[in-house]
Image 1 (cartoon, rainbow, N blue to C red):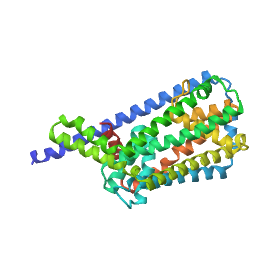
Image 2: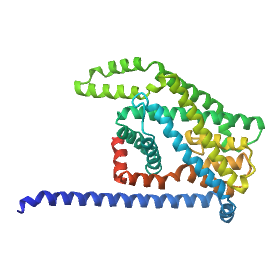
Image 3: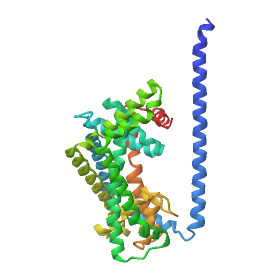
Image 4: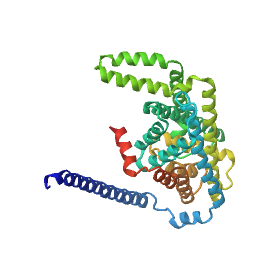
Length: 366
């Protein structure tokens, strides 16, 4: 009798050790968060000695909440368009994918991106692969395609914004001078590389498959078959690019997606008294510079959209730091963080746990 209970007790002890390890990890995360908060607070105190916190708080008092509601609606619409665009990527494997599955995976995926960081990128293609019963490698290929089209659109919007700023002859501070001096070169090189990559995926995928299989030909049989399966599935995921109608539809959805993003920026801008009178061109400039800063690590600034959004308003539009910072925080919350509550609700409804989402991340890290 005693011996028969040993596996049960052993399982309980193992489970207790797992829970204890999770608790230790959580404590370390909270400790790290506290250190980061204190460091940021100390930096703000030393660098922004003239920052008027009361004026920053007062900036929120004059917000027009109707425009913020419009911004939230635009942000929600952007996830729907992303799901529709992903359906086009799926068509070679699933001619009629479930929009509901794609939308729920999109919402959960972006929630995971907020909570897990960049490793959370893998949650969405993983969920879509499971829901639609297609190879994971094909959905990782779809993720690559999505990022290519998003980068192209972001760079195009930034190029238009850059041309407008240069035409206006505005003088900027040293922290944005790099953007004006190197921005055009970065846009040109980046767009050329992305377009060449798209052309390669569109016209030379079969050639790439044969050469890749030749390269890995020395591997043992089972491993060789497994890698071949992944390569074939990945190239199947880019199959939509070989169809002219599908390519045109992806381009149309990409333009619509980024028009909605710019409209979301415009709603947030209209919501704040300090930026209420911005013209559509001004909105495009803000959206272009912030999108560029989100994908390129600008020297002395980094890639944080909150910092760059505030900096653009200060150096290009000559706002004070206080309302500019308030605007940047609200923009970040609406375009990045607001998806978290909805994502958690959808995940709970579908029976997904936080541990399950973390395991997806850890599986892809491995």
